[in-house]
Each structure stands twice: as structure tokens, then as C-alpha cells.
Amino acid sequence: MFSLSMETYCRFKSIYAKIADHWSMIDDAEELEIVSKNMEQGYGVVKIYSLYCIIGMGCFLAMPITYPLLDYVIPMENKTRTMGEPLYVEYGLDPKKYYYPLMTQGFFGGLGCISVFVAFDVSYMMLTNYFKSIYTKIEDHWSLIDDAEELGIMFKNMKQGHRIVKIYSLYCIVGMGCFIAMPITYPLLDYVIPMENKTRTMGAPAYVEYGIDPEVYYYPLMAQGIFGNLACITL
Image (cartoon, rainbow, N blue to C red):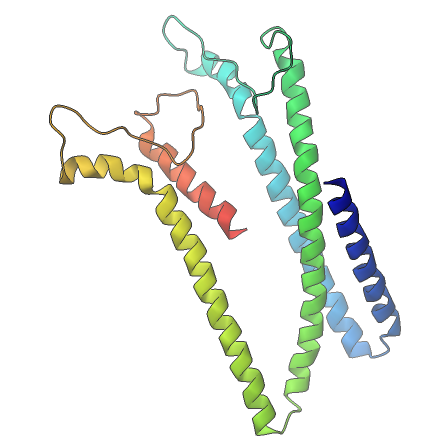
């Protein structure tokens, strides 16, 4: 993992060095304006994406601490909810006694990990915006092309790429949608092919301990799971 990280770091460093050299060689005011505009747009997207990922992961990691809080809001009769953790780890000590220190360690450790992934993602996003500015310059070049054959070749390849992107995107989103919606077929099958003297189990896309009755809040939890997973796959 360390060697892979160092290799990726060296590649990024090499790419950024080439970008810096290219930027210093730009003497066309129009081209410089295009590059600067696209990089500023990318910077805005990067900030929103970073906040979305870090806040989302923070909410996810903080979910277990809602169990003790729910005991005050929606108390259960004659019992309390389990004090869970973001991830199961065998610490070798009493998890109830050191619950809040362990929760703090898991929370900030998880945020540290997601920050590393976000850093790589935003690096690719900024590179994408840089290359977008180059393609914008190429688009201006297209308007100067007077060779019908050359223009036809370019449009043909761009249409093929656009078609592949649409098919791949639909395949991923529809496939994931069908997969995570599979549990909801169980209650529907009770109406189509009912079983004698019993009903099918009401499952969920992924096992999560919400600390509330999953049968009472089944459909809201299913909706949250489906749209949450679809949002993840689109990223």
C-alpha cells in the first residue's frame, strides 16, 4: 500500500510539474482566461464535493452515538439500546466503560481516512478541469476546420464515445438500482405468490443497526438505503 501510494504521488507530482511548465508558456491572453476560468469552476466544485464527503462520512460515523440519544427521545420499554461503534474493532478493553473515547477515536480516524480518498478525488477533478480548458481551446480550433473529411472523423469518434458513456452509466445505475431494490420484492411477492400461514422476511439493502423498529419504519429505511447507494454509485 505504501509503495502504491508513493508511486501515485510521484505520478501526480510529474503531471503537476508539466502543467506548471505549460502554464508558464501560455502567452495567449484568451487561452489563459479559458484555463483560469475552468480552474476556478473546478475549485468551487472541489469545495462542495469535499464538504459533501466529509460531512456525509461524519454523519455516518456518528450514527452509533444516536442510540444513547434515542433512549431520551424514544425510550424503549424496560431496556436500553445497544451502545454501538462505527466499526467493530477488538480493543481488548471494556467497550462500555471507554465508549466515548473509543467513539472519538473511531470518528476522527474515519474522517482522516476519508480525507485521504477525497484528496485523490479532488486531484483528479482539478486535472479534469485543466484538460477541459484544453478541450475548450480545441473546440475553438474546430470552428477553423474547413476540411469536411477531418470534421467528419472527429464527430464520428465523439459520438461513439458519447454512446459508450451513456450505455455504461445506465448499466451501472440500473444494475445497482435493481440490486439494492431486491429486498423490496419480498413484501411484493406476498401479494403475488403468498405463502401459507406466514410472510416473507422484510430485508434491507445493507445491514445497519438503526436503533428503531425496522418493520415499522421499513419503507422509509428502504428509500434511504436505495437513494443513498445510488448516490454512491454515481460518484
